[in-house]
Length: 125
Length: 98
Image (cartoon, rainbow over all chains, first blue to last red; front, side, top):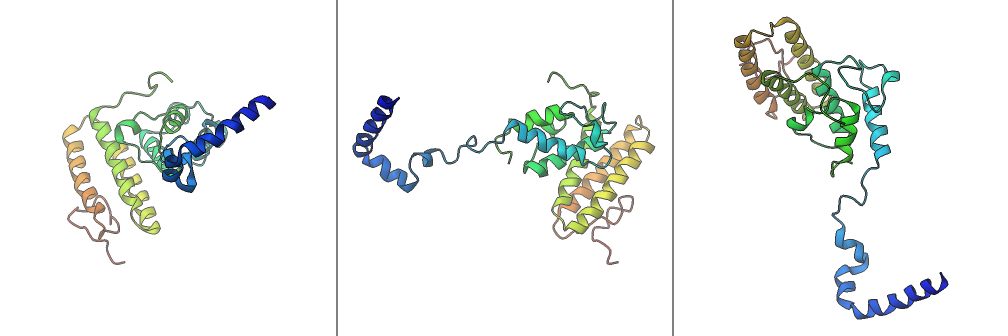
């Protein structure tokens, strides 16, 4: 381990001196600035998405919060209608600052699909 | 995940849901108070028609869809702050000063 650390420390110094252009363009931000637009750096974790999706569904007026799990169908299990389904998806849009196109929104009919969709959405925040 | 477990939606049902979504989206652009009022009006109107209108009465449903589309276009205009009532003639755009 000590040898590895020593080697790494040794290698790093020439890398900086050999590549002045990189450090100049990178500025004081360094290498991370190369991918500052990447959507995966601060991507939501699955458990965070799950927790927030469930809390949105539980707070829906017609839903008994104790029946909500990460695998319930809005209409079959929670007794909601298709208009409620639209309202829930809209509430999720607001929660995660997304706009879900009609084609996708029509498919989201369960907590499970909502979690999957939002977790895989690069813009979910 | 698998396929959807819900009932398959007809084209007409999809149009209705898409309109409903459109109304709720348009309402987001209004003030909190107007938004709340629009949402409750739109929600009760859609639910009333869902219950009362015969699902085989395509001609009437198409008429309601056309009417709702026009109302939605008007609601999207920034000058329009609300819907007086959806069953009132859609030529009435401006919110009544009550």
